[in-house]
Length: 71
Image (tube, rainbow, N blue to C red; front, side, top):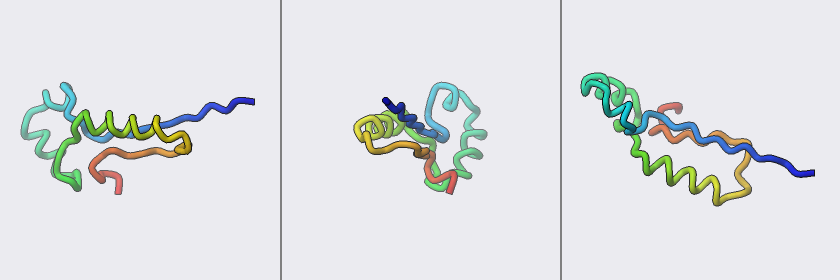
């Protein structure tokens, strides 16, 4: 019997084209609610995804990459 593992990454607000197209005032208001006071970099998501795939023992967890927004 094989088991499928589901790995989930829950990104916060990341500096994608959509987010960066927001009005600067809206981004500032959004950033004010993030404890790290910044929007995440797409490379941070890539590093997290790499970490998840390289560690087979991680399973059934949600890894929040959101600047501590969900604390």
